Image (cartoon, rainbow, N blue to C red; front, side, top):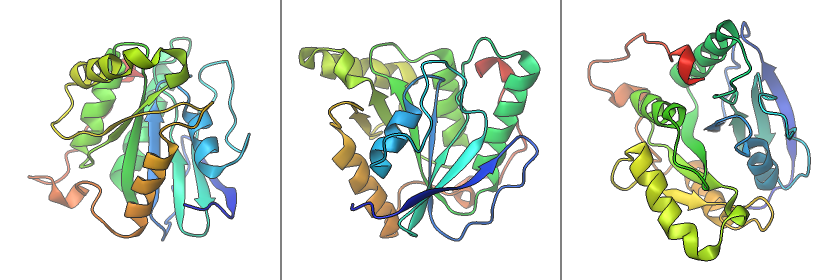
Length: 219
């Protein structure tokens, strides 16, 4: 995948109406400080278009990055930020839920989990919520450069087991420093642009959509 042009096109806050985009969308979810912005910058081949910070909780909006006039990369608010008050957590959760439910162009969802640790309760809950809204998430195991090569497969298994991941769930170890795993992510995005099925859509869910909310405590 050759990146020629990227731009931050739309930023949506809690009360914003999401854009009615016509291009396919790939969304990125994960805990605060898991490396979401670093991954998105790596995909876009930019150093700092997606703002990175050592301070958790920086991404408090839904950000739409237009890539090559072919697709959008959608950066969702980080969850699990303990210092945010309960009202703000609930608002972020509703915003993520609203996007997953409302997007007509969402084709792929990436869930980022720190490869060094067991998935948290919030990670497990988010994985289940993504499934609930009809998508089979690709798990990106970030911060690969922080562990030894001999530990990788063990940690990948811990993530699979910790998420209670469905059989066949793809887990891609990724390093923002070495860019290991980036080519696999590009392949998935190219498949998305080729209209190859990446997962279920909301219409595939038995019984239709149920109006439910992401519990604020997981955020």
